[in-house]
Length: 375
Image 1 (tube, rainbow, N blue to C red):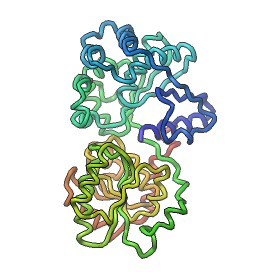
Image 2: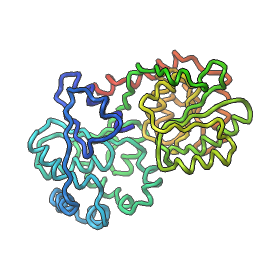
Image 3: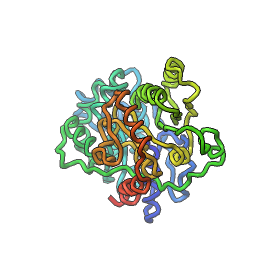
């Protein structure tokens, strides 16, 4: 999600006539071919780990206490730390007016690199997810993440502006990073213009034939945050009530675990996990319903994209984003996190009485790319 949003913003800024660099630690990923020629890709070079650590300390010599546990002592430094020296050289060399970064590792790297370079570039950092929930999730097992909060409290105030993708993220970040709430501006994620919904192979697929059972769609990385196990259990309950099928788009470390659950639930014939797909809109435009089962989010792009395709939605009322997108449940039911029975009932009710697709598309227009880029 973050990668797609940054690509969309870069494209929009370039279309406004600005010079835009997309500065990457790794020039890789499935979305690079979407970049217009007007966006210049800058590939940073990694330094040895020790040099990255020294660079951070040089940028903030008085911050030794906060740096010690998350940066200086771990056997391996955080991946972005190795790119800070070259990012500092980039700032000195190109002197961009402003640098926009997203997520804590990149935000910290940007702020340290500016100090190291003694550059005048203004830094806008962006928080994309509900930080307290993220720290209680998989990151809780990562040693350095246990000590990240004091680091954010020290470094984030250096930013010229701080952006969050939802009010829920902003409220949480203000508490975690001890920032005045008024310092954080909420700018909703931009959705892409939903143009390419055609896919001849998908249109010919038996699951999307006119007489086939309705298809429920899930979408996202196969990781604990997305809680697809709850979606599978809810689907099994729905399937016991009526013919229905489930497709979950995305790839991730939980694939084997989820496939085993599919087998245990006895729903293998009606569940399909095709992995990553480049054009999810073709699926969204054909699905009977999109279900978001996440345990936490920032502002889930997939939920907005489903609305933009006119696809009915149900969602967990997770922190944070869904209640803001769906206006407290006006545009789709909200259910408790991890409650398979409640999710199943919401799915059944929406399948029984789907909302007007035009109304859903109108709601999605509030999250347009131009509005986000302008702000």
